[in-house]
Length: 237
Image 1 (tube, rainbow, N blue to C red):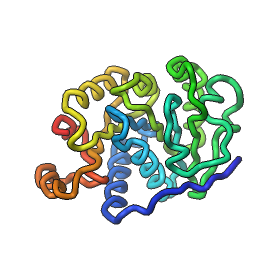
Image 2 (cartoon, rainbow, N blue to C red):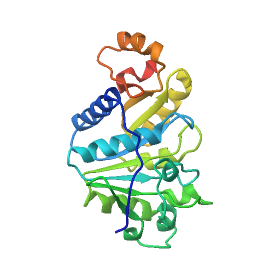
Image 3 (tube, rainbow, N blue to C red):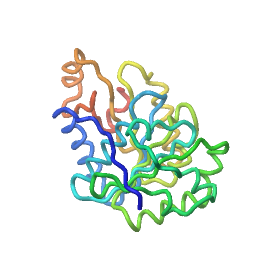
């Protein structure tokens, strides 16, 4: 298995604590919540950063985890993590050009594997609806404790809803001060209509001057470049 070094910026203490809180809340959702998708309403809300940080935090507690980059339309994960030299990815596997073992790579973080998206596919919806994708997740369940799937924004394309029916739960990333309530509610409804259980919302990119106000309003919430909030607070995002 090929191994890559991930270029991950060092996080502040507050951010590390927020990610641990997100991880802990995921654990308390039950040991049957192992296949977790992460999506957002629109691009740029930080879903990929949340996906990477959550997977890294899971590995830090000794659990095996694979991060699946399911954005086969316009992925930024490889460049974001400084990964080079990986020739094949998810789109190659789903189109039958290789076997699963050819596209999974180990990382410099123990127990943390990654599956990159590969090149942009002309038929992403058909590939994600294929038996190869559902079969891949079933195979991964036999190997990993957790499968974190970074999906395209559901407010833009339908991919996350397709993956939602195969997942155990979903996490929404919402940018503070940018995403409107109605759009966030629509994305939440799409996830639930697909059969996905929305486990919670990460309120991201909260400005420093607003942090105290958000903390006072949401007692018990935690900051992840913003705040992690449970699904009960999603309507107020």
